[in-house]
Length: 62
Image (spheres, rainbow, N blue to C red):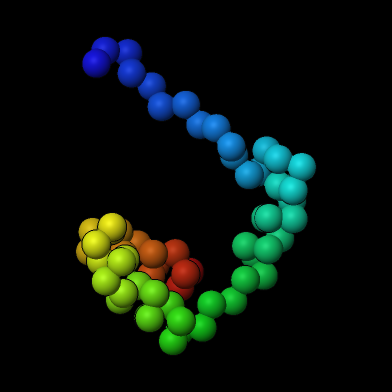
């Protein structure tokens, strides 16, 4: 396809609750045990590549 562009819809940061969502993400604490369990699950491994899962780890451990 030529001139194909992805349009972004339903962007939470642009909604009425955008600031609340931003605060929630800043304050969210995920335990190591929960993170390990979720990122090692068969579902995560099915839908995401190893490099994507590694990136998830890096995002949490900033």
